[in-house]
Image (tube, rainbow over all chains, first blue to last red; front, side):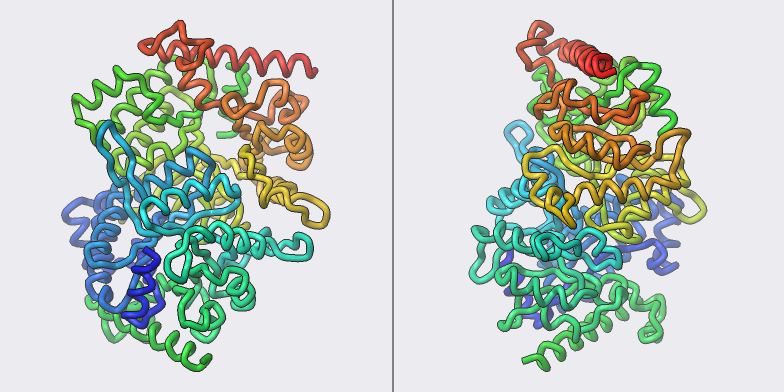
Length: 309
Length: 309
């Protein structure tokens, strides 16, 4: 799957991923209205609204991008119907040949981590059959529990040729509370980064490992250091756009081959129609605004990478 | 909810929680057979089997215990049908007046953490209505992302009178990889424990905060220290029984009032019938074996606490 991700990045010239994190407040009124007419103002109605919203965005951007990153929390908040919309979104994106990164940030130990890994990346055995529960291509994993928590995910990835992005330095303001604390003179996130490199060593595609890392765009200096600590790991970079990261901040997340990072934008793309810059599209044509925002993001990052050469 | 938990502990004299972490391999053959006859060897069949298994155990132990802790990963691995069985289990346990601790180990930032909190502890708004997605009483939370990740959970708890257990020192062998690393001469888990105490300060029930911590039974010395760092926090203690923790190891997790901790056992209770000690019950009467195992656990911890007085 890491090879597919790389090939798609090279083909689209777009090291970007669109975060499908639908808040109900982003969904245009006409879509909400239609969904509520059919299902009432219920969890099913909300789930239908976010699914239709996602579908229209995906239809308008899938040819420009290599990957999407649905954030499961935004679906899970609507209970079972929400999770059905998550699954529908994953399946639909895969049918469009997009690489799907499930932003699930799971992490537990032993057989429990194995259950998450099986449910999201692998297949679970039931009698003589086996079934994929959610079937994403990559998932994000929380490292706080150590190797016991990560290894079951790595094992499933080896079997299924899938991949991981492990939280190293997150994009939020308080990420330093624990992640920046110094251990033998070095911040915790560097130690986690070293572990990511180690976990990824025997999980290699051609040039990159399928065990990657999450490092926030909001911390470019830390990204520079982590790039060197994990030379073979792909870095998933959230925090571009709405959270404040800019193309120029991102160059150090990439290697000299122009690869090694994939930058996420969620709200900046899926709710682009709410920005002044894209207001001309109007709410009805929200997905065209998303397409324009994707094109602008590709140009911004492309220019920054070009300048850094 | 912390008051309800305390009252139920005092009434049952059982500071214990039964972990409903059903592996399909634990479910007796006759239950699997019935479920598969009805639904085939499918995700629905597996979900039905674990639900029936849970129900029979709950029916046999609910009067002895204050709380259950379903581990969502064990359901999530069976996709949507599995999560429906999770919800059914939560609802059923609540109908039996048990406190339900959703072992979900979620953790993200800002609006994403808020979405998890709303989905598991609160209510989500859809138009003019609001709905509870999963509606547990407590959930477990991963602290790696710092205050940004925890605060949205705390906010929902305040509103809904619910509670949290935040991972501090987990029970697994490799938990020390990051959690034990020294920061200014003190292990990371102590710093996380201090934060838990701080987050919990303005979240007080009568004597205890509804922001608690997870500390593994397998680390009794660390439990002793953390008990002092977080005097007002309830500690959820996994790792008893199958993972090696014993009653005598647990006394330091409690305060002098005999409260402040709740000890989880999963496999040791729900798959008790597989142990030599309870083999006489036979597979057919697996839930009676679970009841006997609960009684033995209550006695073990009760004796240990009595001796420590």
